[in-house]
Length: 308
Image 1: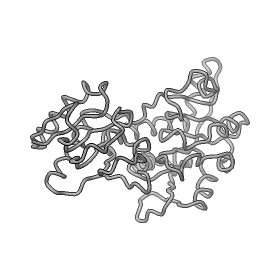
Image 2: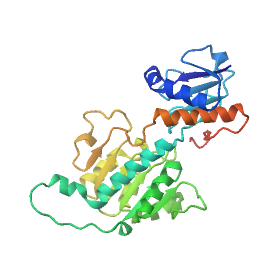
Image 3: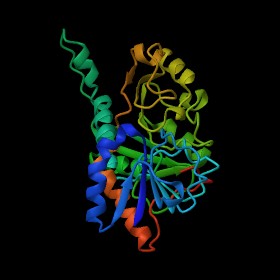
Image 4: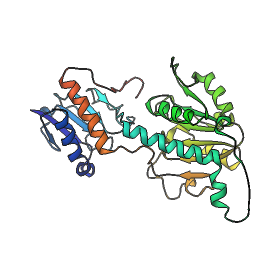
């Protein structure tokens, strides 16, 4: 019988046990889903980076490690992990991210805070139409493309950027260092949806933040390390940036005394933009196990060199 080890942490087991058992049954997989097992007996590991399991060496029969998170930066560098590592690409996670991004883009585009915060007086400020608002999505993977397409469907003037060229996209896109400067210089709202790698850490530093037009807004539901915190605070304090909506941080939970919490130009949300939902994530995991048992290629295998 196939042995599947749930090593995503004891706290998540009650939430995931039922959905995983149902998804495995629906996929036609007869398996022993357990929280403990002799390492040499384990065929698959369901994982989350906060797991106590850090040494994969004893799992000599393990065919794949299936991550419950989209992000893999906290595990991809583990030298003991020689098995294929699959990241979570979940339609439910993507939908949640699209809803978060579209909601906050519309909030800043329409200037909703002006009317919420100013209960007195009558200030009639008409925003431009969406087609007159330039939005840039940094990162054109699964999540970035989904968000860019949703915004384009609302008539926003959307462009994208990726580190390497991605031909055939239905969204106008830039790539590379030169393309990043061109893209940032026109962007009124920037959405960051890149993975954290050595190449993307502090991508938005002081120089690159200075390329943005005055009054630009940043929305970061991607990774906290994509933006230089000190440079971002300086740009906000100087009034060059109008606002930053941040869902991810270098340290989480965000410390109570962090300047982001009290800054008048910063909105903090507690890493809720694209939470993994047990019911849909379980189906993704079960389908990948089904594929592997049928000798089909695993989906969403992490490229160790690229880091995602």
